Length: 137
Image (cartoon, one colour):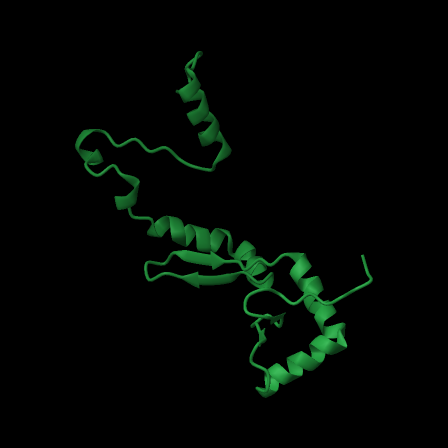
């Protein structure tokens, strides 16, 4: 495929995909290719390479708040919790609003049960976020 002069559309798409990604193509002739599907191949060497080659990247991700973990097989798991900046602005405005601050205090004391405070610090009523009145644009 790499040495052909003319490729059909399917071959061009595959070639583009291969060139865009860092991969190797290994040929296993005849009996050596008994189990050819990708799900049954062992990937421990690849994961070890990933951990050592990309260690600075993993450290930076960890510092930026990405939760990193490892599976029992040695795989690396990453999860990111993304919240829109609008939610951050609403939470900051809630802390400046005297009425909502009073309600937050009542919720924390347990005297008010119609509101709740979420783990990220936002005051909510049932599920909707409480948005304070503001003259800012």
